[in-house]
Length: 352
Length: 262
Image (cartoon, rainbow over all chains, first blue to last red):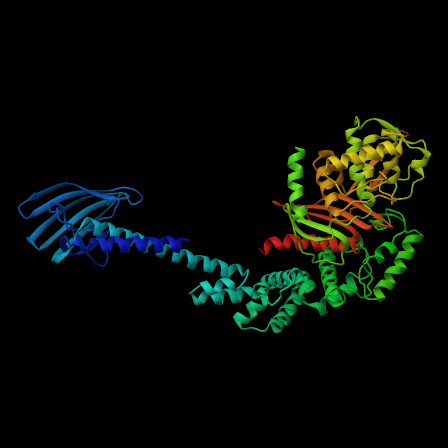
């Protein structure tokens, strides 16, 4: 949107420039100023200004929009004036310029800002004529504003690119980012276990609900691997080894199927949800969810220990599948335990 | 108030949502922050099992509710099948204790005693339930047994039960009781009975605040879960579930995970 605004302003500026072909000539001055402050001298800055016709009494120096020149006096070849700036960079200044010739001046301005004083030295040289109509000035100002806005938008875009690269939500923003560092940042971030897992989970989530899996937008991890130039499986293997070292059960549950199956067999299989160690509860739940998804993919209609079979598990009693670990085991539960063992043997890992 | 409630509930009914867990249950809905996230045959008519007790609770609270009132346990109430507290005939408990046991432990003996204390005519109570359901906009439901035992002609849907659950949770007493992992009551004779919640997610899945479980031979494993984390909340209504707790846990985590991913 900001780009659009900037473009509109540029168009407006172009129109204004076209209107300015009437050519009322002003004076073109080259002004060099040097600032000295607290014993330091800043490098000289040179700019060109176009002094408009009818501004004969005003000094040919560049001032900010927030500054106002007042109390101007001329005595012989010496021009003096004061300047007041408001806003964020509030300042007060007092200047004296000496015209060595009608086309050349030198002078100084003492400025006080934020309790500190500085001295600005000026030297101006008239270069010739310029297009000094008011409309031209307005056009230049619009153009300058548009450029400023565009620059601001670009800076914001650059900043947003940095942020998105670090967040590593998907790789598709990279097409809008010019800084190659963003790609490096993104590719490093996406290989971190929590980001890798998040993107993998999102990819699976979209695969489950999307009928068109060929859409790259639905494969943020696969596309990341392609853009960043790494092998998904090798990266996953490496991260699984790391997860094993760090006992990162969350990562293992969803990203390391072989490793997860081993842990699930030890920690989840045949156990009730309520009887599981708290440290394995999320692991077992996530593993169960993944199993559920795989089951769906592999055998939609095939026999499994799920679905309507669950009703057959339950006698007519309401409590039987609820957390009965608090209750002594009755005959029904024993039967169910045997069923669970059978279920496990059939590949169903979990007991409710 | 009712109008506003209906408005918030109607929107998801007509929405289309994917079914990423097709074998998790015969029917389910997952609602994230009032947005229908996932669903499976959400308008399929199924036995509601003990989820019906939420409606019973609303009807009881509408009927000159007095939590301190002593109610007697009939011979019939003492003989109903589990889940139960083990109340004996002629024992007395307060109506408040019966309501708590019905919602927390899904105790059928407490449920039956409570219903009998409101109306000795089961048909009359049933009529009150269905009238209340109609007021909640549960257009696809018919309740026969106040405690949720399977009964011919009894049915509800995941969508309707979500309406019921939201209405029930808007009652502070029900919301409070449904979030308790355990409680105890004392009979008039001084017998103390401790009971734990049938909702296995309480205390095990971060942010779980209720709400009700159910399980019968026809209904299968049923669950209404409400989980709140920071400024987000998830409702899960599951009818005819398979590995109920494992999958409910995983589905709810997945629902919260989908926020982070977007």
